Length: 257
View 1 (cartoon, rainbow, N blue to C red):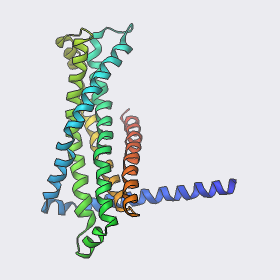
View 2: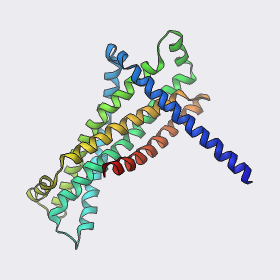
View 3: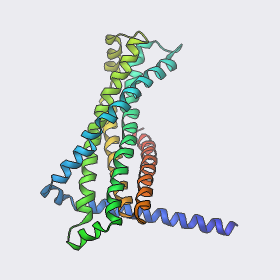
View 4: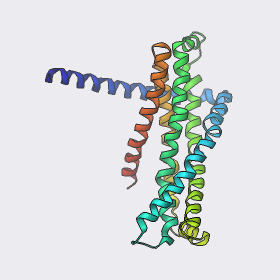
């Protein structure tokens, strides 16, 4: 029994490092194909629209309720400890540094990362990627590079949008249900606002976006087994991307301190 367990553990460990190596190789290939992106930017702008503009309604819904819940939670935590005049800074800093980037990234992992894996996976199982290689077109340059760079550009923009909407949501709850005025709420935000918190959130968003796109492309390129394989790749992309977002969030906070 122990021998079988060790063999299983060893096989999983080897597979993990193989996956890391494959993702690293894909990342280098994406960077090497950057020149192609400059020459033919039509796909790049399409991906920017798909990843960024088309995600705005979903991000809006998530952000407004994230801000509302943050206000209730902050009011609960501050009750009996600090006055509600600190509600603005308590909610805004949590939103800008943590909730905005992380929740937006997880939403994008579900909407965009899974979509990337499904699109490329479908092309893989229908041999369209083999056709691209036959025509001398790099699948990485044609499929992965536009998606990767569109993600790292649009994710910080989505994070800014989410931060703004979430802070407005927190203010609405603070004003209408907790009696905190506009001046008191935003004076607290302004007094304790740190530009470093804002840039930290944007950096996190850019990293999360790049990781989501890269993993989606990697899983899509490794898809096998027809329609069932595409479905499994879609699920795997979302699960792995979400887990990596939370792991990287912890690592970035550790480095930040």
